[in-house]
Length: 324
Image (cartoon, rainbow, N blue to C red; front, side):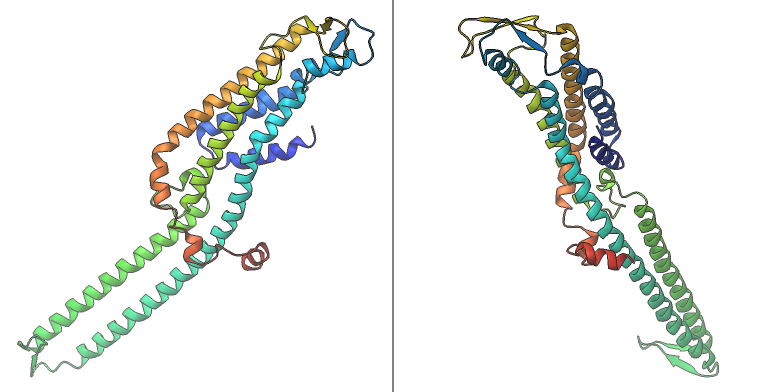
């Protein structure tokens, strides 16, 4: 059971990015499948579950191999690992991508600060020039505008003050836009969930959402495949028989084999079957909910903050050094 804590950690990491239905899926998978596999279900099947009425060398062993081509515990453990494989790949991808997004956001905030300083310098220079022009006005003279219109000093003063007011408003507007952009980036930093990546106000790349949907799709397909494959592997269906008629070589005749605790095994089989159907059902609903967003996410897949700031191809060592 100790090795399964790694999978549990991956599932908990996935929970940070998932939808409400995805959280139900993880709870069902962890509580009703993983835990039950190592408790109730695990104790239902053992090495000596089949006892055959024969003394022919090798006959009993071949009957066991025919009845249990794969031990059910082993089959379900392989199923769990295969279902978790897309989840683990998703978590690895998202973890790497989030590090690069954090670096890109850091560069974005630095660029916004530089732009803010440039705006302040630009408008300070304009206001300074206007102030100098106001001080140089000679109210006894007439002035000609760029349009060739003659105005007196008072009219010129009025125009310059209107221009000063317009510059102040424009400066304030641009600074407010920059402050909003900085605030949005800081808020996005705390909410880099894959399922939020399709929102227009969020700079989280939509490829995270596409990766999440892909993970849900393959996770559900693998789960459904193993449910189907179960009925191809075992001679019984969902009810464990009390006896089994074996005719495998080297048995000299049809041999009767007796299964221990068939009712307990039947309960274990139904637990795994029903919980498997439940996780497939939840997965299908979750995938169907995300389908309407796939088109927009696919079209926006190139809108990636990590590409904009050229951190998409950084190595792990470069990421570590940049983050310091």
